[in-house]
Length: 194
Image (cartoon, rainbow, N blue to C red; front, side, top):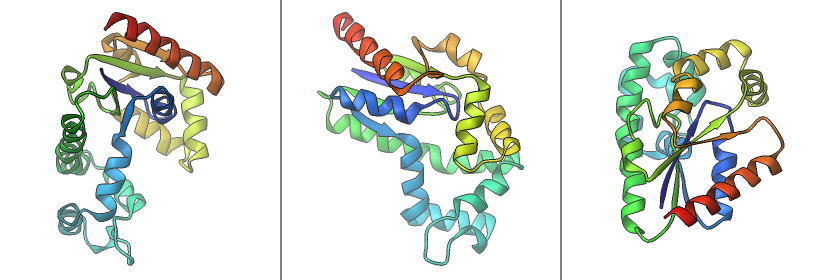
């Protein structure tokens, strides 16, 4: 079974992905794949250097994600360029992993699942939902200002549209145990369906 897991920024995709993993799913966190590419993929680092300059590369190597974010979240063209650079590589990673172990159950966390029309690659799609107030609080805990957090939320497809397109929606405004129960109940339901 292949699950495409999405939701707005700060809605708890990684936490939910961990619960799928607890139940035996193999997991791909596409945000982590991006971090790995920005840390050590030489063609990516070369392209970043050429496009944005040396200041987006840390002295010890790897991309300075904060420096890149300060550019791309205020420049739609730069953000589109960055997405064109990274997204095909990220998709290549998760599709390759699934090909290597077709017998496994997979949970692939893709923030822009619907924006990039990737839902066709999955048996089911699951969207994590949180209130904007909780999203903002979670993003503040990660060091983003309210302004930065709102800008990132607004760059994504509205949650209402993701909910309509998803096969299943999980609410993550409560405790971790409540989210875990929802994930486990969904897995039990899907196991009986497939």
